[in-house]
Amino acid sequence: MNIRDHSSQFTVYVFTPHVDPGASVKVYLSQAGYDAYFFQDLETLEIRLKENAPHVLVFSAAHLKAELSDFVKYVRKINDEIAFIALDQLSQFEILAQYKEQGFTDIISDDMITIESRVVWSVDRTCEKIYQTYLNEQIFNDLELLKDQLKAAKINQPAVNPIASNVLVKSEGPPLSFKIGQYRAALNKEEMVQIFLNNIFGTVCIFFKYLPSVRSFLATHANGIDANQINGVGCQLDPSETSELEVLLGLGNLPLAFVHLLKEAFQFDPARIIPVFGDREVEGVFVYSGKIEEDASAFITEEFSIFSICNAQFNLEKKVDILEVQDYVTGLRNRNFYLQALDDEIVRSRRLRRSVSVVKISIDNLYEIESAHGEANRDLLLKLVAEVLIKGSRATDYNCRTAFNTMAIVLPLCSKKGAALRAERIRRAIESETFLDEKIKVSVSLGVSEFPTLCVSSKSLDETANRALDFIQEKGGNKICLYKAPSTHRPEFEISHE
Image (cartoon, rainbow, N blue to C red; front, side, top):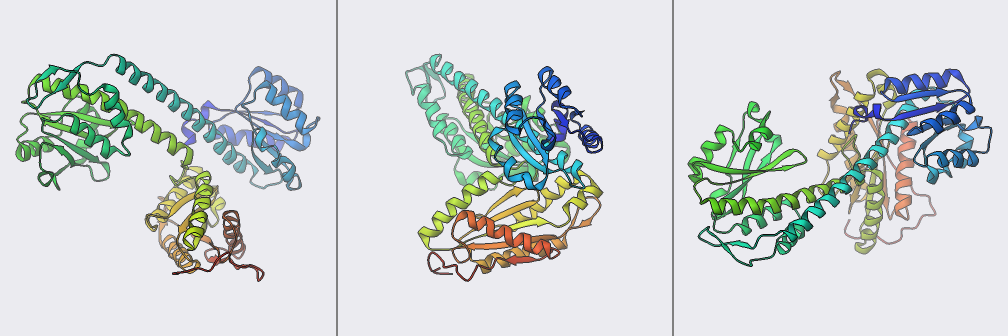
């Protein structure tokens, strides 16, 4: 997600008696696309809050006339969905942090040299969360609509069933609720495709999965054909054929190379297709002969209507899961997922009596890179570094973004020595790369910790990895640091099979 595509939809108020930082912050927010306003006096702010409540209120906590608690109650009474970003001295952070449940999304030191960029970053993250919450609500509404459609389909279900001769006859057949139950019980898309093919028995039909990374359709499932006949069968498209692929398939047509493949390999001449779309992107296509009887073709279309509704609901449910656990800048899992993964892996570590490690990664001099190349390139850089982490990870590892400039890898069943080696490989891989169009060189700092030999819990595993990261950053960065446990630490259990 790029919040710049939606920032004009958000209103941000800035309140501080000081003209220089207040006006400057307002300008930076406006340049980022936000509908931003600056207020010097509290009375004018209160009037505008009543007239048109903002999405985000950035305010100087030190210059409130009333108690902070009274001010927060007053604003939330006007609109309890306003998000607060407080500006204050570092000494007040612990007090302000107590208001997290009252809509406070960030606390920023008001004596920062780069306060404008820091406020914009914080507003970006806050508005991303607001927007994603809105998307969640829309998705749940769509799910409810789909459920209503399914209920209506159950009420209006036709009493028909196909027979092997492909002729439709009146029959009680399996109830529609049973078919829907079949699709809803599927654990993945592959199972749903196979259920569809099973339900149109008597008709030769092949499912070709679309692989956008290689511009290819690959046969993965079939009904009425031996599995060996479709093994490795596929068709790669020219770049020109992919630009309007969704439109072409939507009209019931196929690229010419695909048409020739179906004619030569399966004698589908002509071929009929049913495209499968997910979130407006091509997932694949069902293909069968255009020479089958119209009644059989009509039945396939009716069966696909059930499949498509269940497939859409499957996509929406998966999208809800992604919104809840994914960081939209890097594509990595977010901090909530990371904390849950730590808890789960500590439980598994104790059960198996095996270690679990964490590597924390931070890009060196990220603020300087942002100042020189802009916020868009900063986010792109974070994404590119995240891709390096993913490429070097095992299937069992968890790659997460846990803070603005912090990524983490949870390494199940991995010792501190193995984690340190992995961290060094990551450091070297990133150091050897060039990033962005400007071909800039980037380095990272990495902190490593392990349970149980270096800490006692999931919380302390995260904290000790952070301490190691902070230590090496203070020393200049571009190195790894393995946390050193205090002499009083005693492992919860002895590690076996390391």
